[in-house]
Image 1 (tube, one colour):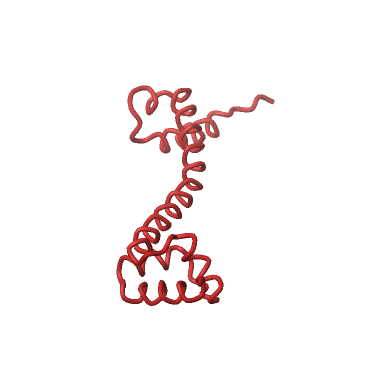
Image 2 (cartoon, one colour):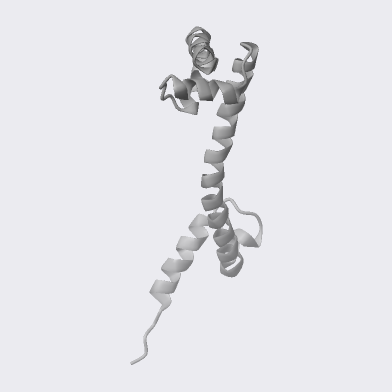
Length: 117
């Protein structure tokens, strides 16, 4: 018995072309080119989801450091002071405090200074 793969193949091709929407030239029209472009796009998607976390963490650290240096402390000493004071705020929360609530952040800096020495 001969098996026809046309229905399955059309579904698979449609799925690839749907993901290739917005690509330019042959990469959105031809199956082979679209498949390769979609595979690369998926690899970049996966990689960049990891990079996004790294980028945001470094942004938060830069914001915290900028604020803390104005108060006469370095980022490293500030984190050390918070750790010794048993303050368990993550960097995202600290960066938000530095931007949105400077007075609360100044209190934290004073607390860290007290525990660092």
